[in-house]
Image (cartoon, rainbow, N blue to C red; front, top):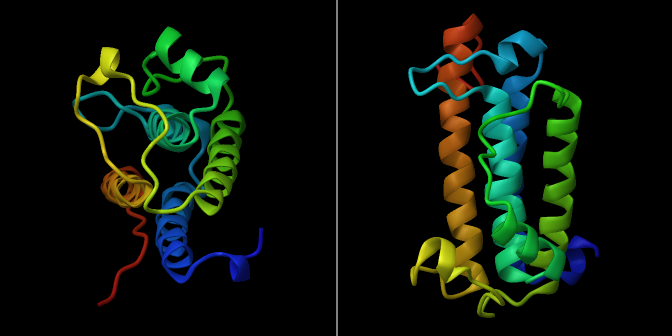
Length: 170
């Protein structure tokens, strides 16, 4: 689907979301595997774990699960809520980053195919109770906020690791 076939609001929201996603991957460029897997903060999360969290708990859950209600995804989310923040030692950095890129592409397809005013097609009250977002628009805005927040976390951690900063206007 080309950008020309999207409505202006959807196109704008996707542009902002994609910008934050690019920030997440961009701030990590140049870090070696040890740095990506090393806990830097007292909570113990790693840069790679954060990317895996964004892939599974954010992109996969909200778009393929909640918005699209893909049966294999909803079943997986119920059966395997898991801890996406922890990356298995045998999972490569490339697999985590490629998985995030794949979920981004799939999420963008769901967003492009779904009206922003549509209600989510699925919600797991057994996992999260009655709280939920009411429209795809609200979900996209939530994911933009979540992704931007985590991009900021990665900015701080990257500066602690090697002093690199994403964008600094002096």
